[in-house]
Image (cartoon, rainbow, N blue to C red):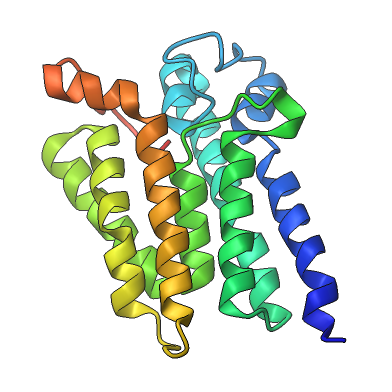
Amino acid sequence: MNTMLLLAPGLILGAYLLGSISSAILVCRLLGLPDPRSEGSGNPGATNVLRIGGRRGKRAAAITLLGDSLKGLLPMLAAHALGAAPLVLALVGLAAFLGHLYPVFFAFRGGKGVATALGVQFGLYWPIGLGVAAIWLFVARGLRISSAAALTSMALAPALVWGLWPLRGDGDTGMLVAMQGLITLLLFWRHRSNIRNLLSGTEGRIETGPGPG
């Protein structure tokens, strides 16, 4: 029996469980900050942690951003190291992302997934992640709106996967594009209130600090 057939379920489950660890909630608890689910926008992500963190907001947001990114990056690196096929890579990446959105450890109340999606993209193939991050930075610097940067970069992410994935053949690229397409759709769904605010011109702007999420 193919060893990967035995390892794949563990990789996928492990990715979901790691994704379910909420960096924002844990960081806020450790630093004595309010629960990000009940303050600010109510989203357990780096941008909201920055918003509610006061003087410690920048540090707390940076740690949250790193933690959320690693939840996507580490499972993908592990899958690559074990020689996972593109289908398994796609399922591992999707599982990590779903863990962040619907964390089993936090009553399935998770974040919007931008940083974790970016971690998945860097773990899949670093030029893809770099391309998405560059688009995010370009839009964020121009518009000073985090959600607009996130939505634009993730809307273009499937095209980047298609264009930059180096190991083409046998539909492999299509599987990975489909994974990213599903991640993008879920991310847009989670940002539906932000989209309404963008359309009405009431979406908040970035005041200071980095941070998708």
